[in-house]
Length: 246
Picture (cartoon, rainbow, N blue to C red):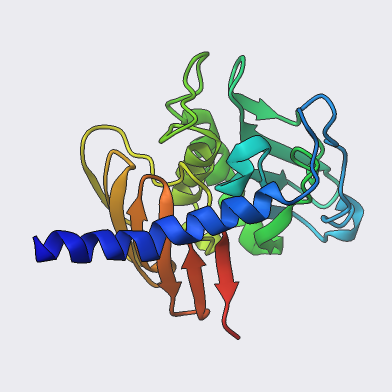
């Protein structure tokens, strides 16, 4: 019985307590009551395409709406193909044909929440991966009507995680509070990144671990992530997300 008590205390301290605290913080924030009243306009976070020399790729994220916003961000990919091109935004939604192109401004707010640039690459480095990113977008297996499950996935973050696995050169790690990023089909799955920088194992996206140069060390439980980033020292707090230490 002692081991079960220790396990309960560990789960409470690592996952439940931070999640409840984040939910309380989120409940105290003034925000739109529905998607109809939310602001979906450009935020100005991205520079204008003319100010970005050559091609570029961006990973973006913003808190989602309603109660979900207490626990997760929504992620998307932005691509600029050439020096004189504009931005193209790709994300997955939960209605209609789920994978969308340019349904919103490239740096548009999500349920009024201002996005962040999680990772970016430009110039020749971006040019080398854009083709692979576009191929991964086209090959995404959950792109038909009905191919969306809010939890544990496949959802919007499962889509972006699929694309990022195809372009490890971006060096991007999805936010730890991007619920759905760890989804994998079937009962159990193990994966090693193409560049051998990360190992990921999961039971249906519900319980799992990640370890490596990009992930650091993570424990996954029901979509929540607790962990530590060693390369860029930070705590990964369930629901809340990343807390940089330096």
